[in-house]
Length: 221
Length: 272
Image (cartoon, rainbow over all chains, first blue to last red; front, side, top):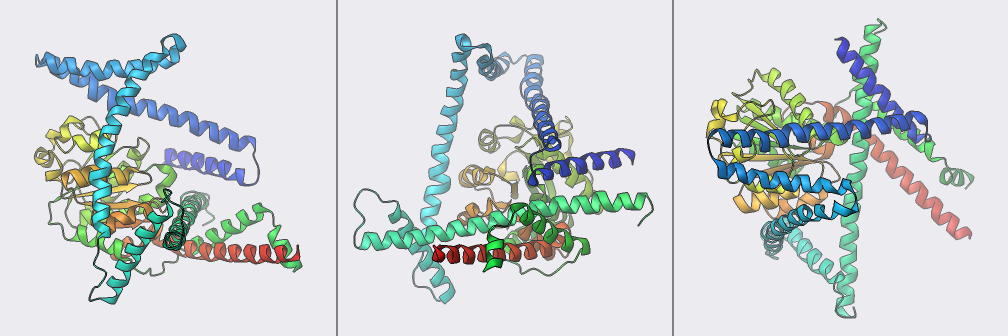
């Protein structure tokens, strides 16, 4: 009980401290900001250690060693060494270049996976999703399909830079920019909703997790 | 005209205060108003509803406290739906700060439905690596999650003994505040044919719609509005539903401010 009250008060105080920045920059805000950065960093370190290094490398190494599976245990040394090589950046420019090797390894894997995923998971399904019948029985479906078809074609035209945009190309690109602007508008609308939702979340916390229980505790409610 | 001039030159802190009040006052009354159910949320609900009892649903907690007001209500609603339908839930995540939120949600909702850890649900915890894990889990989940969040071997839970890869996961729900949603679709969905539902923040939602249109995902729960719709479908209004009046009023207020600012802008330009 006492722990909940204390943690709620700390969270509420820090929320107010952060919100105080809306008035102007102040030491209370700075304190909360620095506290957040520090705790976040520590949290990451502990989590990566407890949920990655220990179970994925150390525990597994011991497991394979106990089973006499030295090949699998040896393979585990490779990522461990690559991870340690990444830390050489801290040791100055003389040995810092070593960190480029694990970075190159990571980039290589990322690029390899990314190329396949982009084609298999984005490009082909999205092209397939655009190949829609322009004449359908339902007028609603037909209108939607026509909008999607022309939206895609004209938006692509807007990004066509190999030839001067004249005539049909110009009209197409002008229509394309309208579609793009509508997409930006929808995105902006959703973003406004998202930001207000965050404020609602904090307000809800302040009212129903902090103010109301506190008033009840002191007997006013 | 002087009023318009004053509105244009208003101190932004006054706007902050007004937005604060516009959000604060409706919240005080805890009013729940009905929300129109959108097609993407309905599809998500129906996809979960159609799963046979005992199916495994994997929920990926890819959000953290910075987006909890949007993501937590949809996570809680999905959990309630799963437990109500006697589906087994496997929680995991790619963002370290999100895992405690996942645990909070599980503790809260499992008590409501009398569900037991290890029997009806399990929390596998956090592993960094996103794509490598998503691809690798198509082969064997144990390669990355041999132990759960508490360090218990997952094979000690009876229902997890039969879960090896995406073939054993009937539905994947990603609650995302970033690009993880697209990664799940591109890696687990495209490569392994995993059925996916995306619950995302409002910022991410517009990027996800093309995947719904192309049939790559089963449904979208977008932002607090999507969460409120899901709560309504469950007939269990909670935080998102309570937040909707404040959201609607604040939207009206923002639209009003945008219109006033534009009118003022044009008047000022004409004067020049």
